[in-house]
Amino acid sequence: MSLGAFYHGKPDHPGVVVVGAKGMLGTHVCELLTSLGVPFFAVDRAELDLSSADAVNTSDLDMSAVWFNCAAWTDVDGAEEHEERALAINGGPGLRALCARVKDAGGLLVHVSTDYVFEGTASEPYGTDHPRSPIGAYGRTKAAGEVIVETSGCDYIIARTSWLYSPYANNFVKTMAKLTGDRDELKVVSDQRGRPTSAEHLARSLVGLVDAGARGVFHVTDGGECTWHEFACAIRDGLGHTCEIAPCTTEEFPRPAPRPSYSVLDLSKTERVLGAMSSWRDNLEAVLNHLRVQGRARSA
Ligand SMILES: NC(=O)c1ccc[n+]([C@@H]2O[C@H](COP(=O)([O-])OP(=O)(O)OC[C@H]3O[C@@H](n4cnc5c(N)ncnc54)[C@H](OP(=O)(O)O)[C@@H]3O)[C@@H](O)[C@H]2O)c1
Image (tube, rainbow, N blue to C red; front, side, top):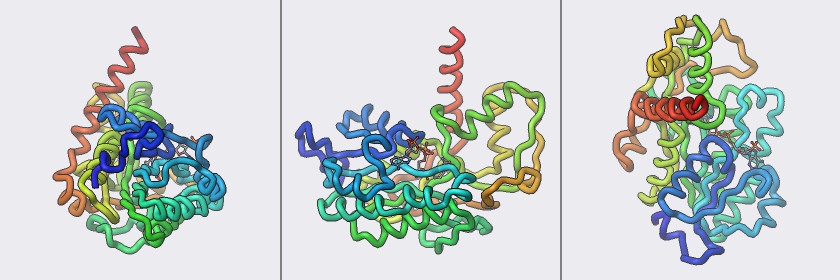
């Protein structure tokens, strides 16, 4: 059933709701739907607090719609100290209530999850059916959310993604764009391997999965894989910066939350539906172009 099939042609029934619409991914989903001419409701925490079952149960938003859930607690390090608060958003009563109402109304929940539901020590890409085994608080809360969605009985797509970047919001690409421009030298970890994901590409893939009538768990990232160090070098080179980027180990950069050393997600199931995922180098180039335009506009 395609996105359009959820639209009944009434102004009060756009057929699509985006939750967490002001976040990095939410912004891209809204942009894409706008460019496709698909009517939708965009809500964020102020309009629908996903950590509250009451808020969900009393919401008059259309539960028979396609719900893109882009809302989350995404502060990986902060979740170590505030796991209960992160759980409330990522895998709490509000999400359970949303699933129940979407199920009763015959809607579809497109729920976004993460490579952090795995322990991150594999040596080959994680399949969609690999058992969840998070090593940190954020991953535990996201894994809890997946279980709620899977066991709710609602129609769902769970899309796990990793290393999200965009011209908007704070993310690795924007940080590196700034640091490699400002500094002469930098250290970036070279012992963590994964798949970067353009949020714009993820948004397109989510809509593609809905339009293809897909259901179940999918992995959606850019094609290819790299280390953070390789990714940083590609950002520097793409922007023509000359900063020296030295590889370093995770141990040299202790963080509150443990980081996966290998979190490459297997894309084969998704690629059978959508075709080959576009490569992170191509998607990065598109984002760097956007940043160049932003930079020129700022200095004009
Ligand atoms: N970023 C990554 O590298 C990454 C990697 C893998 C997976 N993911 C997953 O991808 C999805 C999108 O991530 P993102 O980076 O786009 O997130 P983001 O930029 O942090 O945006 C999250 C959005 O959710 C909203 N939100 C937070 N708590 C809420 C609540 N209780 N009710 C309603 N909305 C709430 C936030 O609003 P406030 O600003 O008011 O808090 C924000 O607008 C998430 O499921 C995340 O777990 C992200």
